[in-house]
Image (cartoon, rainbow, N blue to C red; front, side, top):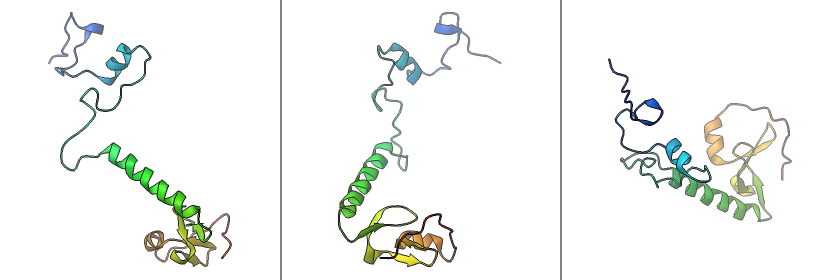
Length: 123
């Protein structure tokens, strides 16, 4: 059983055969101590099919919030009481519990009832 100890390595332990630099080592070598940008070390991005793409997720969230701000600026818009995104009033359904709900949230709620601390005024 080996613990991969080599006397010449920094800190006394090797990097278990990995030739790539770790984020901690990169930060320690940086003047500011800040982490390098994603992808600059070649170890952060996973290019396998079906792998999680962080940048794509961030971009889709930016698009979603941009669309939400655009709808929110219109006079006939109100929020869904569940996802809290803005929709036109005619796209929402008012539930007897006292809040508006979009089609997607209504589908997921089904016949479940939710108690709301603050009810939305029916428009």
